[in-house]
Image (cartoon, rainbow, N blue to C red; front, side, top):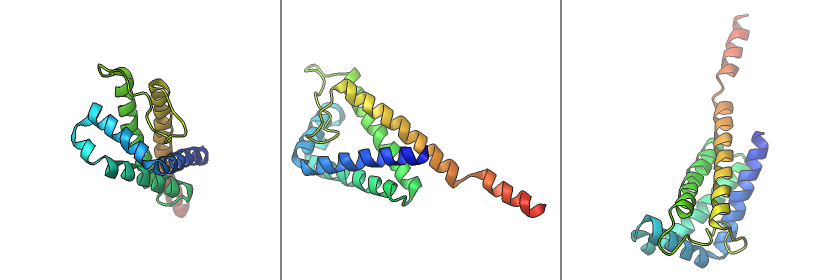
Length: 156
């Protein structure tokens, strides 16, 4: 299960980061739109830097998970980013502005466009997968039963 979760999350993050970085100006506009609507005016001035940072972090987290480098860090990155994305898409879906919801989340750049509902559902499903992957990774990394079995075997 851990391998399947790792591959699915890594693939989603790599595709998302690559597709957004190829159309960085379009993703920058999405960041500006979400920032102006739901976060604050300060995001507008830093939209290019935020868009680039999101793409780079997605790519690094995806590569780290795919190559099994620092699995705890990559799983925390998945959960942190997907928590924020789920919050944003949820606010967009359940609390639209006077002008309505933002039509496309820009999750996969210009290649795939999601409605607010499908964007939120995608984020929720990926967040549940990321939480499961974090749990499995932490349980495997800090498994108490392994050390207690070694201790018991050394006593016997």
